[in-house]
Length: 433
View 1: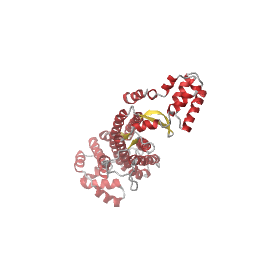
View 2: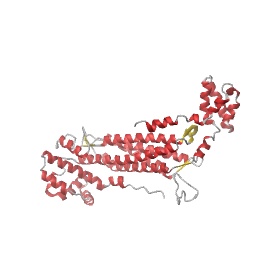
View 3: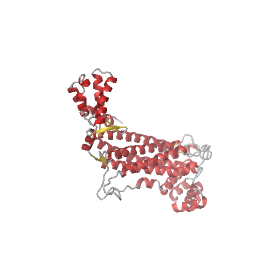
View 4: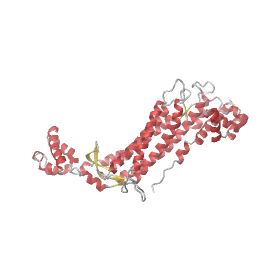
């Protein structure tokens, strides 16, 4: 059976339990720094760190009447620390906690996604070398163009996923900023030094300037990196869908024993994994639009972004994690049919060599316009009459007058068409990243 994909890491990361735990980490770090700087008693900070607890159900109960999630959280924690609660959330506003905790969540989410992207990268590399010499027809506009290899197709995907890894790394740095600057970013109730120290403890950088919130262009950049990554997964899956079409039959998703493709047609083997990838990628891309809308807020802050982020941040991270895993599985188990690829290559009776013939005629001294006319004349006849293109060319006196039969043989030589594949592979896999 195809293994069921679960989300133990990413799903847990975006649970309410983890969210509140990150909030508590921020609050405790603030208490520790205040104690170090003498703002609050050290014994109070120690007691808070020792005794601070929260309960998700209790927070929900409090929020039902308070109608404010952060106050419900601080009220719940206050119940576990007693009189020391006056030093908890000291000098902070809600977004100080939420946005700094979001940075922690997004950093960890990026790490999980990067692990999945590296796994896909390695699978693409392995299979690219496996099919490096597997010849197939390249298609432009969906129409046969010139020969390529399936290994080169996979090498292209490898390079794109590698770029996505760099995008995610960059976006990870961009969102790894916390802020404790208060209601409008002026540090009216807390020292910038507290922010510096707390962020250092949490592995974050302090936001150089903020309003009540970390600016949402940071989140938009993160969602953009995920959206592009999801689009790359769709790009791979869409190619598999095309190659699995009955008329093409050059590749096929894994179809396991006992699997069924249709309730009405027992013969069906459908590319369901690829179709799932293509569909879910649309959601990640659409979430980017919402993230872009969140950049513009009223004055120093409104909360129009808040409800949106409760959906798009976990959903985009979870879906990107899922898409990378599904795409890696797709490529790892993908069945390739080299004989069918070669058969399809010659389905147009050698027309895929027309470009090489054009070049040889110009090298022989013909103008490009005259050379193009001679090649197209024979190509169109081959296309319409389903005649062998090579035989038509050999029989054309205007062509044989300028090119020897020996050179014509080289024109229709696959090895000559693919002589630079090794160099491309060297560029992709050997050059330092």
